[in-house]
Image (tube, rainbow, N blue to C red; front, top):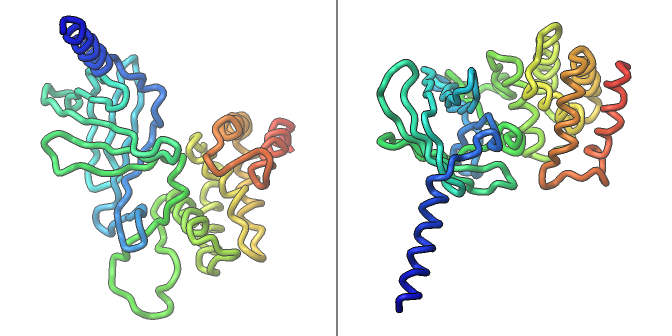
Length: 274
C-alpha cells in the first residue's frame, strides 16, 4: 500500500512539473487564422464589417507578445509566463497596463496546423489554423451588399493584395479544379502587380512560392511568371523562404513528386539570380 501511495505521489509530481514547465514559444507557429464552421466544413470567413480574427506570437526586446488583430480593433498582450506542454497556459497583461488576461493553447491536429485557442472570461473558444496551412481551407469574403446579378460573381476585392492572393489561391486549391474563373485570374494578376517594388515578409514569400507551385489554371501562365519575378526581386529573402519550405514539407508534400519536387531547382535559380 505504501508503494502504491508513493507511486501516485510520483505521478502527480511529474504531471505538476510538466504543467509548470516553461513552454517553448519559439517552437510554435507564429501566425494563426480563425476558422469558422459552415455548411461545407471549416473555412476562413471574412465578414464585411468585422474581418476575421488572426493571432501573432512574436518576441521583441526579450519579451514575448500575443497580438489579436484582423477585426475592428487590435489587442496586444504582454506574455508574463507561458507554461505547459500539451496545453500551454499564457498568463498575460494587456500592453502597458496591469490588467490580467489568460489564454490557453492546445493542438487539435499538429500535422495539419490546427489548434484550439481559448481566452479566459471571454466567449472565445475557436479553432485556428497556422498561416502555413491556411492554404488548405476555402476562403469566403462576405459581400458588403446584396447582389444577385451575374456580374457579381467572382471574388470580392481585398484591401491588401496579399490577402486577395491568399484567398484566390486557397479557394482554387480547395476546389481542386483544373481552371479558375476569368474574374479570379484577373484579380490574381492585379494583386500580384500591386506587390511590385514592395518589401515582402517571409509569410508573403511562402505564399508566392505556393502560387508558383500550385496555381496553374488552364491557359493562365501569368501567376507562375509574376510570382517568380517577385521572388527573384526579393533575392536572399526568397532563398531563405524556399529553404524553409524544403525543410518543412506539409503532410501531403514530397520531394519525390511534382510540383514540390521542383523546389530545389527553384532554389538553384534564385541563388543564381536568374
